[in-house]
Length: 227
Image (tube, rainbow, N blue to C red; front, side, top):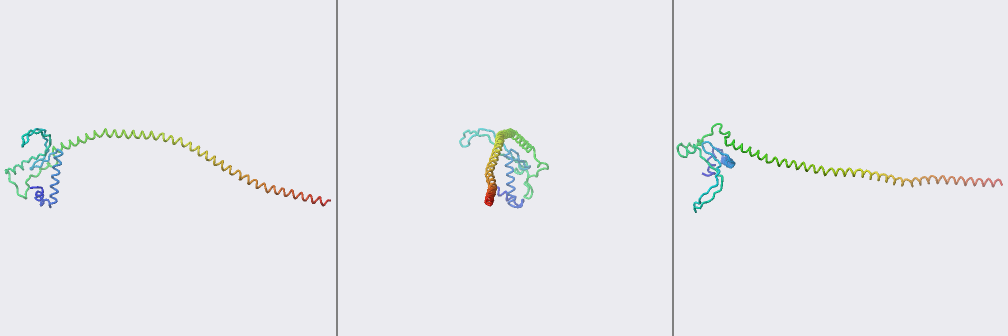
């Protein structure tokens, strides 16, 4: 029986071929991932899947009989449960198609065993080790940021002083420009004032000359009458 035939065999119980295929894929994926992580997958009445480490050893090539060095490796291993063994050996009769061949898990067995507790402890220790390794890196990063802030503050201080020095200079320049503008306006206003004064005095002078000439003519007429 291959995978496709296995899916067809359980399709009626799971409500369709697609549901059966998804279930088979999910179960196989979970078993493989757990065994690769070093956990043991145990199914009551069926068997257990686990990871086994094989040390380095010497073996012989069956074709040439030559001695060969075999490296250290890890292999998956399946151990059949007692109920599975009894059914295969014939000591127990295989139930009919409608019944379950593998015994149901007893109450409380689905909450996790010692193996899962050990795996959780291993994961916790790994997380603690990673946190310890990351702590110096975090401290170094904080120190670098603090040093960078100090350097930027030092650079900003001379810039502020330079701007403060430039401010009085700009004030003095503004004062000079205002005084120059005032002087220019005063110079422009002086000729205008002189011209206005000259215009006012000119009619007065003309009037005085007219009066003097009139007086002279009257005096001449009076002298002529007397003669």
